[in-house]
Image 1 (cartoon, rainbow, N blue to C red):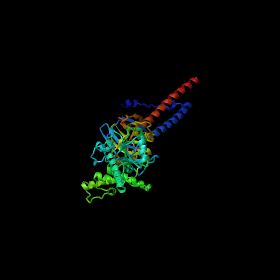
Image 2: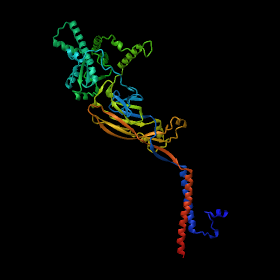
Image 3: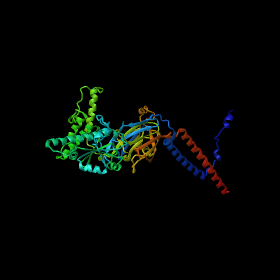
Image 4: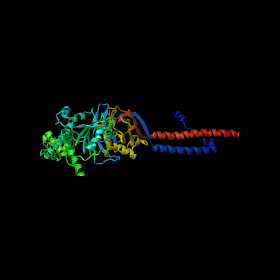
Amino acid sequence: MARGITSLDMYRKVPQDLLEGTKSGSALSYAAIFIMVTLFYLETAAFFSSKMVTDLALDSNRDPRLRVNFNITMMDLKCDYAVIDVVSVLGVDQNVTQHVTKFQIDAEGVRQRFHGRNKKQDDVIMHDELVTESLEELHENGEDAISLDEQTLEFAQHENEFLFVDFYASWCSHCRDLAPTWETLGEVMTDSAIYKVDEHIEEHGHEYSDEEYEEAVKLALPVLIAKVDCVTHPTMCQTQNVRAYPTLRLFVSGDFKADYRGHRTVLEMTNWLSGMEEAHKKEDEEHELKVGDAHEVARERMEVEETRDEMNQPPKRPDTRDPKSAEEQEWIEKMNRYRSRHRPEWRDEDHPGCQISGFLMVDRAPGNFHVKAQSLGHDIAPHMANVSHEVHHLSFGDPSVHNSIKRGDTVTPVNFYETTRPMDGNVYVIKNMHEAHHHYLKVVTTDFDNPSINSRYSQRSPNYGRRAYQILQSSQISYFRNDQVPEAKFTYDLSPIAVSYRMSSRRWYDYLTSLMAIIGGMFTVFGMLESGVHAVTSKKRR
């Protein structure tokens, strides 16, 4: 038994007397030792270091919602009209205002930090409910809101100190609703002029013929109320830069003064016109105030007791502060009207653009969000909607993770930060009408190690601070029908394949195996080499 055990010996010894040293064997031994030490060092360095490994797998992300961060400047779209809509394949279609901030951009592209901030569309009263007659009934005794064309508009601007024009479209529903109110406003101005002329006749005893009387009424008009059909005169409206219908524009002494944005009732409009006339009076002291009388005529016609002074005073809040009480609701309504009357003067040419920033919480499913021109109180002119835009920032996911990536705290490849925001700084300009850019975004879920995240934060979610979204982006110009309002659309789709980055280091048994392989391999290779050298030199000696 003992002899059988000792017979298994893989390390049999050769007697020392049979060993012979050679110079070639010594040289190769030193070479083998040098190479082995070098390989030992490299293997040890590799063992104590780690490398980044990329893994691909089916996306197992179960988050129901996805955050979209954006900062976009619409170069030629006012904040009054700029809205964001979100659509997903799950059937969600909504206009988004929460978490969205708007800043007006002036003609030089400078953001207005405070004035105009978060300017939202107001719920404007579309027409005066006190006007009960139809447009046909109002036209039975003549048309007081005068229809204008290119030539007559220029003539009206030259002949009338105050000209109030309704730029409308025959297909616009808001314009049709406003038409009786606008005609009534024209009648109010005519009635005011008639009262003025009749007082002059009674005071001075003048007698006028019918033609002279009509001319005197025209001269006494406080404000000429007119209208322009932009369907019939498209070039004229385009020259006036009319982008939405109806646009109610006031001209003073032939020059553009302001657009009316308040409630479309006869009293509100006459009150606004009176304020504009008083402001003009400060510039031209010789000007005679006339619109105030027209406001009184409007009060009588509408059978409203509230005077203009009362309209311009803040309403007194009732003692009962119950939000559901009728008194409180009436006070809120009056206060909203008061605020709408006392907005700061707004010049569209100073604020042609709008910067929209914020974030959206969208369903984690294919969908899109788009920036378009839309108004509660106007119908947008499709040929005047310009949705040229600059994308300052667009990304998906938690912004704090992006900051960690930018600082280099995460295990991600070089230039990974840029792949999460490939559209930043891109400008998309539209040069033709009825066009808009359509952006396609393939969103790739990417997980990685983030050593900067504390363990206590990891309890919120296993991937908290360890997930970002890479974007593969392409853009093209889309063409719209003449009756469609163009929109800047961002379509996103989530990739079914997720990417993960992790640091990988060698196992200790891999390291030991490599060391053994180096020793055995070097011994064997150099042994064979030495045997070959020895055989060649032995033959030469013989």
